[in-house]
Image (cartoon, rainbow, N blue to C red; front, side, top):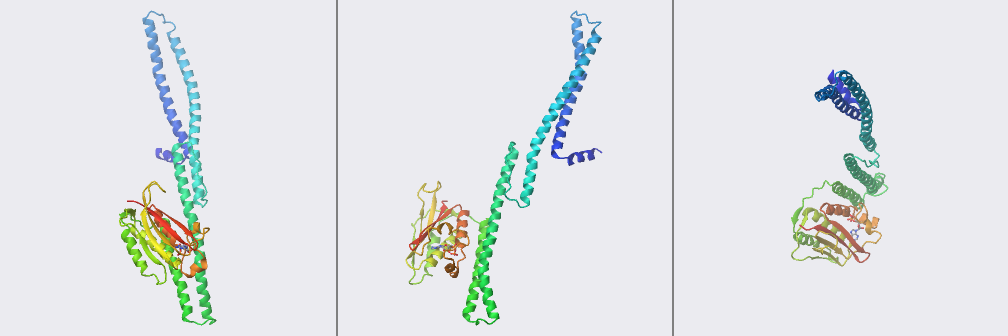
Amino acid sequence: MRKTGWRKMRALPLASRLLLSHLLVMIVGVGTLVIIGKLSSPRFFVTRLQQLEGRGVLLRYTRTYLVDVFQTTWNRSTFWSVIAGATAAGGLSYWISQRIVKPLTQIEQVTQKFASGELGERLPASGIPEINRLANSFNRMAVSLEDVERRRRELVSDLTHELRTPLTVLRGYLEELATERIEATPEVYRQLARETRRLERLINDLQELSKAEAGYLPIKLESVNLRPLLVSLVQRFADQLLEDGPILRLECPDQLPKVLADIDRVEQVLVNLLGNALTYTKAGSITVSAGKELEGVKSSVSRLWIAVTDTGVGIAPEDLPHVFERFWRGEKSRNRDSGGTGIGLAISQRLIELQGGEIEVESQVAVGSTFRFYLPLA
Ligand code: ADP
């Protein structure tokens, strides 16, 4: 029996439960007060009367009357005090329970809307600090979820756009081959293979980018000296240079301060920057340089900078803000032929950011470009 009563109480809304628990506390308090008062007050009164009699005051004929009057007065005043106190306490506890429950109901409504896809919903500030903290955490989570959702939507739309072109080319060739409108020459097959390779590269880059953007790429930060990596990369790329192409050189002090970085990820970034420099530089030079950033130039922490400078085609000022955007390419048709996916720099930027650094670009059309990134010193 008691158990069902308890269960029923738990099924009530929070506001009613709060109110009931307040009332219960009040009943216990007032009840104790009344019972103890009822039991002890007349006795004290009688004792006081006896003390008065002891001092010679004559109360023999009025004693019973006085005790009766005292009890009636006590009962009446207690009755009205309980009524007034209970009304005031009941009203106050109703107000308090509403004050606690209202923001909770609001949180419930907002989270339900959020769950059904209305990601713009936010919780208002509350006067109760604990609920305010909860609202702030929820709002922060909402912002980051909205951001992830926005990125996901952009990625899907960019991706659809990027996949469509090679697929259209492939389908066009295959249909023409099927209806024998074109001859199956090795050149046609080479073109088909080129488009397939493009798709393959796109998928690989995309996989890497989605991992980097979602923060799934494992980054193992260690204290490393990057000089040996720079030397070996410059050697490796120098072997790929054509005789009439640009020269590749390294300008780096013998002693480089150590940085806190993941050497594999730094190599990935440098391979991308050097690859781009080679693609967009027909003659002149490509220089890899590194050094310690001058104290307090751009940030309060000491950093190492590494730059890849070329004397290539350069990037137009209006294009500069877009180079790190995924799928962005300079003159699209030219770069599509050169096989670029427009993802390399987006990945590089994310990788550098994951290591606590930043990357920037300076460029001038027909003069050349410098991609420079900073890494925190170990
Ligand atoms: P892609 O795979 O197309 O090279 P990136 O993200 O690496 O993709 O580069 C994006 C675009 O930035 C390139 O298409 C090119 O237009 C421009 N770009 C990158 N590096 C250079 C450079 N060194 N010189 C001139 N333009 C560059």
